[in-house]
Length: 129
Ligand code: HEM
Image (cartoon, rainbow, N blue to C red; front, side, top):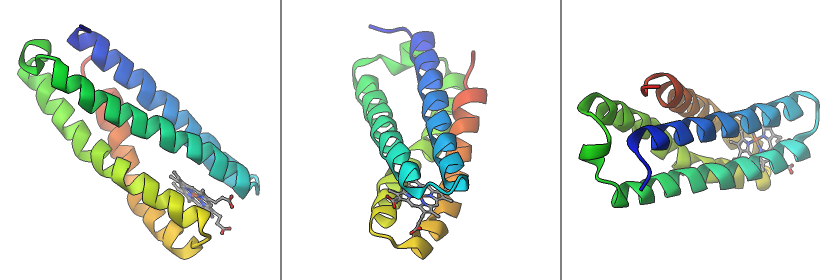
């Protein structure tokens, strides 16, 4: 069984990695390559959902009380308040992008940006390292 610090470190690496992908997808957009933006974000979607699902699954097998102290548990809870809604919004963003609903895609992008910023800040900086 992985220890609490192993889990947190893995989580941080994964959050950082998918954020790099997201930034690359935004750079593709800025470079006038919306198709590349779409493809990079497809990868972003798959990896992010796998991370959230894997993490939730892992928590079913880990003795959460033993693995994490109360402060870490509280920080993890705050992280999931951002990460779980983000994981719901991402597939919606994907469908809106793929079906060319640009206005709706951009409107939701604002909410998504807040959720993702929260996911990164709470995932990388609020959790102990
Ligand atoms: C975070 C801010 C984001 C902004 C500002 C943004 C913006 C855009 C824009 C301007 C387009 C081109 C739309 C058009 O010309 O019709 C687009 C396309 C697209 N976006 Fe995003 N997007 C963002 C995030 C995402 C996310 C998180 C996903 C999915 C996980 C996504 C998936 C797509 C897809 C699949 C397309 C269609 C690409 C294609 O034409 O093949 N986007 N986006």
